[in-house]
Length: 99
Image (cartoon, rainbow, N blue to C red):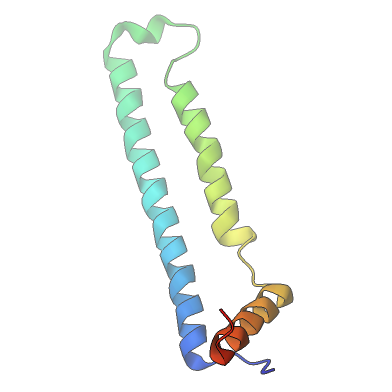
């Protein structure tokens, strides 16, 4: 069983990683824009008298989602030897015609 990935396979893996990073940055940009708008709405209405500004709830909840998205893309996205071996096993099965 080959232990090295082909250039095409490496390209596909790299392409997937770049897509995940791009998706994260788009998610982050939307988060920032929407939350700025929510803060502006809060500041321009009479909500500034509230003890806890209402915009902190969507900001915090969505922020947790952003944190998990970040961790998925930049911390836990490292390939493990197990993943590579499983991919190679599946590729060998497909080459042999074992569906």
